[in-house]
Image 1 (spheres, helix red, strand yellow):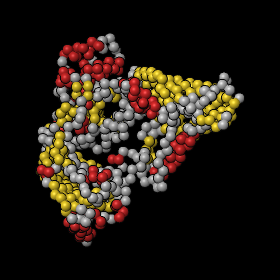
Image 2 (cartoon, helix red, strand yellow):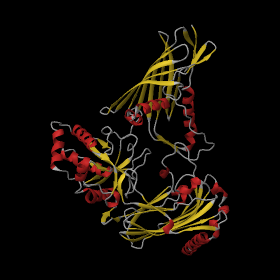
Image 3 (cartoon, helix red, strand yellow):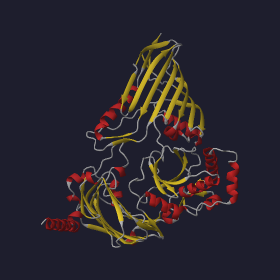
Image 4 (cartoon, helix red, strand yellow):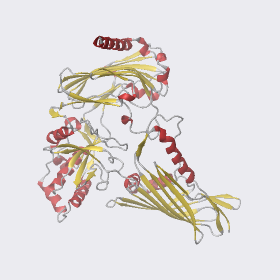
Length: 634
């Protein structure tokens, strides 16, 4: 009896899906459920994605997607786009456009899709092309039915399932199914399924229904970490003629080393000899690595070159040596070869690079990552090198590859490790200033800013701008100061210590305001927090502070002759789980004021219920950064 009930339920679900996909209601924008229209620029009315494993080197992906678009921002959710190259063949592609009542108004055949090169502006060669729908609507809402059939001649890059593809898009019905015609072993992982209406129809067959649009909220984690998705990988796969094994990261890493890296690291004997010459007499391996890294930076430049096995195989080190350019894979592999020549071991490392923090999934081995860096092991510490930058200090990763799980590719196999975390004491901005104010409320000042860690990354590079752009930068940086004039700029970038120093001479007219005989001003001239995180009546999403930092400030202000302090804001200290803040104003001898301030923000993941407390913390900082001093005639 239980088996009969299960069979009847399955049959009912299949019949329901079939009926839903065939119903004309799915084209009528007026029949979208009201709750799905809320917080939505578009609604996915129906989606069916079928992935058929035909053989170890052949996968067919069939897609049908019906999307109702409500405004210009919803257009991107139509997803009528396919990339193709010699390893991906678009066999069928069609779109039909319907008006608000569900009447067909246009049919677009495969030949009518826009077909362009997918070569990026900074690439000298990519074999990718892209076909996409370009439709300019006369009215909103409208609905697009898109169908396609694409054959992948590789099984390494397995199409997973992301029923939600962005903020402000609702999903009425999304269906994903794998048909394993070839009977190849695969592995899978469900992520965030429990938080959404997702049904498992059968093995590797899922349906998501009635998912409301997600509104963006400040401080949210990476979008992909919040939404449901289904990851799939074959335990044995093929990447453009090269077979691989993928039971775990050790297997996958060994395949990468044996099949992608082995034989690519030859460099000419004269280059090896030069590497040994410039490091001659340097016993410490890290010091040798620093010399080689600098040599590589001076000799090469980054340019995108998407060639090789799916863009995964690096250029030959010999070619990089000869040409002087390569992409991240080629430059990393070349640096690795140079280090080997001077007996410094290193490991090719796969990472998700970017400002947001995204890990390689340590529990699920598959083709992952969008970038490559180099790891130099040093006792208990791994030093990571960004080989695409001509200016990065040795071992500096803040802001792009810091604080995330990455894959080391070793001869014996792959290993997941974590890159450097920059704590608050690592990422410091220290601002000091000597200010001379006159009786009109104008001032001149010498300001010094010293930054390290993640804050170094935010500031560095200003020295490469034109003088005009530098002046504009500081006027924007200190936009709280009216009538600001930049008189002189002196910047020092100490790449060995990874310390960035800025010395700026400036002046401003009428900074302080007059009230009768009184002069009123805010003593925090040079490091003021002005933005309060948005207020939400009911926060929906968890929030995250990605990186910690600490600001320390000390400003000595020479008051105008004949004026003295009548009133000033009392000192304040605030300590929370999110960080701390304190400031103090002191009267010094010689008619001077000393303003001191420290603001520290800590990294962390927090439930949505704590956002209100975090916002209150930031709101208090904004308030106290506006603290005032009142001067009167002495």
